[in-house]
Length: 376
Image (cartoon, rainbow, N blue to C red; front, side):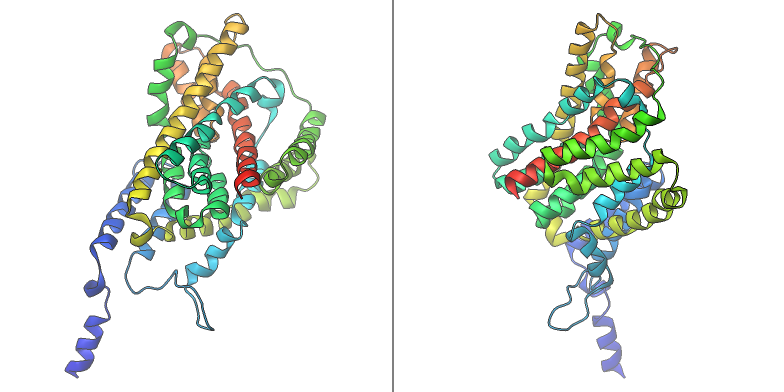
């Protein structure tokens, strides 16, 4: 009897919990706190942090691979949707189904701001190579600068799956911290006069324009960067369902049930890749630092390009909207609105900022496709 009790005690996680796993449990708890108490991207940080918690509980085997006829862990099988590049495009389809591209269509020039903000991706690649990452790994790390979680996961799963955990955590953490990271950069690069600029009301965009837009973007973007089609095509298909107005059942399913299910599976399994062995190393620290630099640089370039548009427009464009060029939708646009109203309470920049914000989503997908074409 004593032998059986001893065997049971030895089989518990308490006696098998290592220091690394304990540290990861603390990190998971911090992320869970940010998601629940601070409400930083809770729909993603809650499942990611809990997946991280689950995988670092010893002997659970939830991410154990099924080999030689043996049964794998639950999260291992769900993770195949990430590994095979299935979940991120479905997330993009849901984003497209929710998105009104009207602000971007009404102001086509804001596409340039979305493109400018992607420079953070490519600048960080060189920094990552300088720190010893291989070109393929550097490409996966650099995509964090786009501030688009699904894109970062998609690129990392194809280019450097062994870095998926820290890349995903960094990408979603910086997305959640947009209200903290961006304002100081925006204020440092603009004058009070520039931040007070009130922009003209956007023109009305017709239904015909909104229907043509996703088809045109799919054709042009797909022909230019075929590797971007999984993300770009899914995004535009979701938007087409929204705009045509004749597939309400499909639209509602994509916007709600499908989006929620895939977000749940994606979050849990991405968090489950952050085991102590994969996460607690010098590479992870480098990724977190480079991710912050990438995101900050992308914000800065977007604002600086906004200042250029301010000059060329004769002071009609508020350069703050350039910060929304990163594709953290709609958080970055809300930050622009908040900073603008702090300087001028009557200023309403939200819809103007949504243009570059949506352009950033498209830009990050094309940037990821470009990296996959070159490095994949």
